[in-house]
Image 1 (cartoon, rainbow, N blue to C red):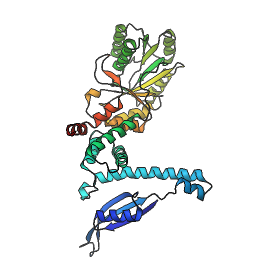
Image 2 (image 1 turned 135 degrees about the vertical axis):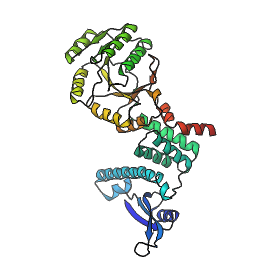
Image 3 (image 1 turned 30 degrees about the vertical axis):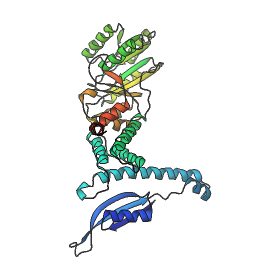
Image 4 (image 1 turned 120 degrees about the vertical axis):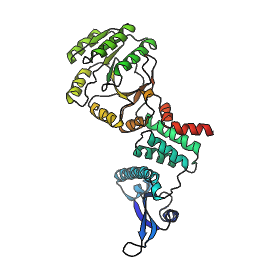
Length: 374
């Protein structure tokens, strides 16, 4: 990669020099205003300093003609391509934050609006920069409001969908484990999933609860079990769980509720792993509340990494107006998202996770403006 420093009177002059010397593929790495000349730091003339770079990696065909070690060279090329992508993300963040310096990078108002909407929704700057840089690169000259909106929407859908689309409970699954901290709505969520399995798929279901630390939780689940005409077993240990599973072996689907307790406690995570150990086909859902602070959600995810999580399930969609944490989480963790809940009503207030709906919710203000102008 070739990196070069330019000092000019104006930014447009620097851009022209960069295009002439480094070509159209050059990346802007850094810009700032500096003082040049003068005496003892005074009376200097204000200039613009720009650091630019261009990838000079040989093409695949050039590599094959110049070296016999083509695989290492190509691997190095891939590494540089990744570096360029990282630079583009940082460049977007830099450009968006240059207002105070009075530098104008000719980003359209629409691009800035979309970027700011992502930030306001809680999307991390690095991830927002990545989305916008990919959108701009894909659009080229088609930098219009409708194009920006549609391209950003599709890029967000791709990013959310990247962890997989096996959202619903799989047909071969025998046991559903539901885990998560206190207060996220695990028991109500289990009731919603169970009711859907009975009413929609005509499954013969049963319940197991290990949440013996809260009497109210056991009573709540027992109420739902009675409504659905399903048996419920209360367990206190892995041995109890084995016995309960054997007793319920003839049922199509078994839902297991677990205690929330303090997920910072390593002993709890260890006990949870023992409880979830089974030879049967199972799925483990980690439940996260969208009303939790993002930092707390990250802490939950880090602690529950020691449990074999298969899918995420977000609750309390109706209790917040900020959804950017979903983008952040699926970007950082490999889990697909299964369902989302939007109220307390059983069985109605649960639905299969819809990437487009979430992307539109995040771009809400921009979408409204776009639709009004169309």
